[in-house]
Image 1 (cartoon, rainbow, N blue to C red):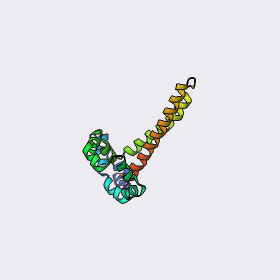
Image 2: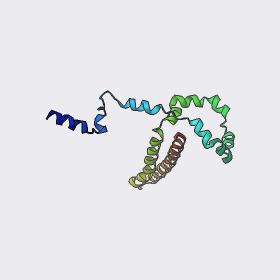
Image 3: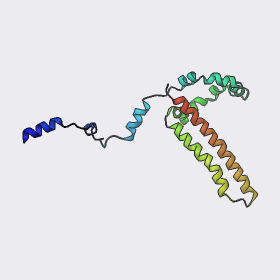
Image 4: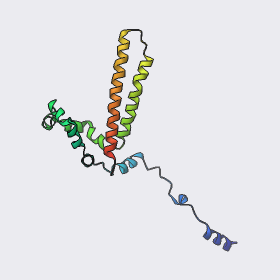
Length: 159
């Protein structure tokens, strides 16, 4: 009987799933984040590949910004880049989760306007004004967040 058991075990094919180790309790979410952050997003390389500065120049955005007083020397003098880094804006641009977060924010804002208009009564003129203000701000904010999400996801795509 022992010889038959050895012959049977030699023919037994084990599943690949059975050979995988059981995930340990010591593995945390932070270890997953560390592996995701190793693939760094190269924003300037993507800006160059997409020719965004050439497109901005053709659209007249750079001259419009300069006419409004926003130039590279102004940005440097005011320390806007260092302030943006302190606030985490530049590091958020390289975080893969930022684009989806912005998309969720845009959807919430775009739904907020109609919901606010529906829920707030129209008994007094100031309530109507409040409805208009919230609707306009939610449409502008939602559209800006949606555009930022689209831009960030395009910049973060690897080639």
